[in-house]
Length: 195
Image 1: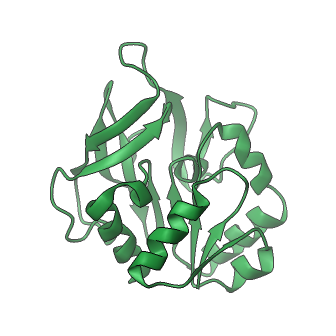
Image 2 (image 1 turned 45 degrees about the horizontal axis):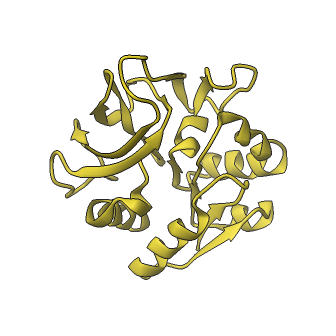
Image 3 (image 1 turned 90 degrees about the horizontal axis):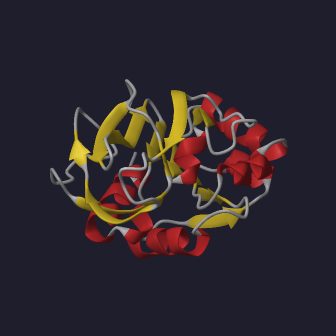
């Protein structure tokens, strides 16, 4: 079962509907015990980085223990940003630190938030992006962006390059919303399910 972590900040119903469409069992949950039993974990997210404070305590402990057991984890949008060390959106808070770096606001030279379809530039081997066409269009909606890091396997150009997809071992993050990205998004979610 895929646990979709409910911390009151995500497109929970849309993510679950995508897994239902693909024929994979998932559950929206804020129960650390259920998260601990999951075969895979998804951290969706929409909104301000401060929303991740709801992940502290038992929810964070359950996620960290699952990571230690090498349970695949997929962070979506804010969920991906929480996997980094921090965000300038809420500098007093820390992320999980699974990936190095701090998320930052888009420069004033581009409209923010970055909303709409943009091309994904795939770079490097990736289990999550396997079989996805080069320059596939995916759907974004965010005001802050993650830096390019060693784990970046997909990037996007908007006011400069930023990480659109990160991957290391069983840790995966996407800045865009695969549940809103049509065929390309469903392809990515299927790859995650089939890990």
